[in-house]
Length: 107
Image (cartoon, rainbow, N blue to C red; front, side, top):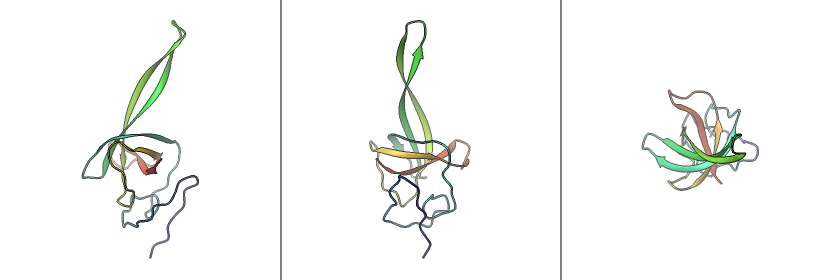
């Protein structure tokens, strides 16, 4: 049985998987940004689309405007998430052309 890695501040999933791109059971290291967002799409190829809100300052009007950002992340099989969930995402090495993040769990 493989040893499960722990990520500080993140709950380890109860399921196990054989995914090499899993931060808990594989060889993937999480580094850089860790943030939360809303899961808006989950593909069968374990690619998920996450959307999060940010505020941009407009100096001329001395106000903020809301902007949304979409990113793509890899979802390991041991993490149970579905569309509409608020999830925690961590930055990792480049996994494909558009995936630089991995889903760590639910909020």
